Length: 91
Image (cartoon, rainbow, N blue to C red; front, side, top):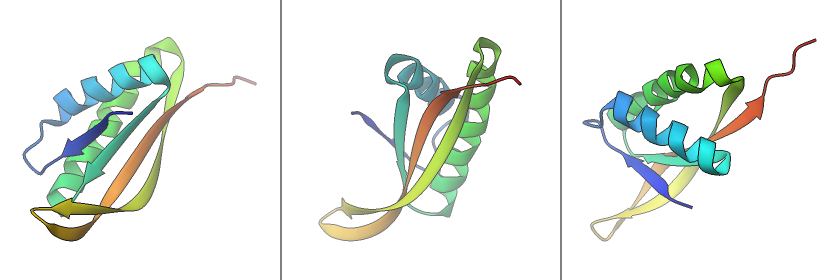
């Protein structure tokens, strides 16, 4: 599975498009963010992606987790966001 690596300079609309595409393809997308700015862009992208897929009856859920990432030979702790689709159930 492809992991989207998000930075503080990532465009949330572009990331949202990638999330929507991955979710339509495999029901799941995974992002990795290191730092507050990167996490902010990632969360914005999830919110935007929800709007992209909502008209087709799909709801996105986001599962946060910690991730150990190696950056320039140094271990860092980042946040992993797993975005999954679930079909809306109307009662």
